[in-house]
Length: 269
Length: 272
Image (spheres, helix red, strand yellow):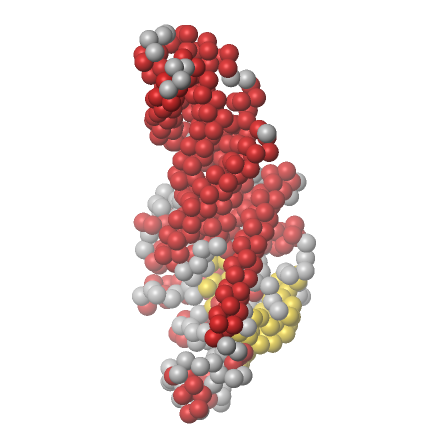
């Protein structure tokens, strides 16, 4: 066989392996999600209930501990949107219409996206690192041989906590972003805060808020499953944990952005 | 009476490599079986099969009379509450204190109240001479203490069958000997059957009722301590006397290895 043909075969072989590994990983993630849901529904009947205490502990870690940074970033994004909005609309002399853009874009897009990315970086990576370390320390095996399902014990509580906390954080981000933007708009356009709030309430429909919250719930599932799937497949000691943690953040953020686009495409048109 | 462990024709592969080759093994009730062998002999793989962490290519593994690869999940869960495992690294949960680690199986599998759980936990800590250490985190313990805490967690449900992976590896001789005594005491006091994986000869001779010597994935010998000591087999004597094995070198194969080429009939991997 010629060298060129050899190279093509080699490239095809590599591509095939990548695809196979991708499908394998996707299947693993899907199995992980369905097993978590199984334990949430049937855990009690199987004498392995998903307990409230670890859910609350995770919720504190994922949600409450993230409040300061979410508050700061959402506020910043709100002000940024206001500045850009006024700058853009000034070209048409329509800066008084800036509230429309701010309200819709922060509630429907920016707040869920920023919150999702932040939680992926904070908690998704922590989940991957924790599971990865547990795996190389044989702690996962240890749970299994004790007759405790690792998915029920470690994954299901994190999943519930994430699905509850991420939308709540997003809602909080909505409020902070709108409020911060309002302060800037009111001072820049020399109107009042109450006029701004009135306008926001008129513009925003429940549907817009739900659009953002529904997305953040999907992001919550993505961040958890991507973090766990990467953590559970750690091999190669401490270096492996580091590699899979980085990978989990990159994958989770990519998944969030792509899913966001697909969701918007399906729902908005 | 059913045997505590019954392995028949166990074959196991890791990728294309054939790790365990038709292993047969019985552990009687109340017996301490030591599995010995050098590095790469398949000890850990065999243990993982006994624990149901790996699925064999062929063969059966019966634990306390039940085929662990065939019984329903709920039954397996029940079975697992009746066996204890002390891993080589201890595998204590680093996010929990020693006491919480030991109490975990009780909290998950029983309906005991917290006072009782506390008492049982402290009782087991007494057994392994770690009384008063329940509030420490695993990171604050020494190597020997971690092994003992792992042992305490393994016996907290009063299992009928206990697996120990290298219970004395990496410990100084005094602590290692104390752990051996502890294993003997546990068997005598609680009547447990035990499977101990070790490559420590002194420890093996001290605690074993019978010894199973694994070599390159096969059972080289399975007999009482005296019989193993008196064995005429050269391989076993090499192992007992810590002699290195002079393997016959095939010059062609050696050259191929040096050149980084794959041996032709290489699906066995480690065979010369």
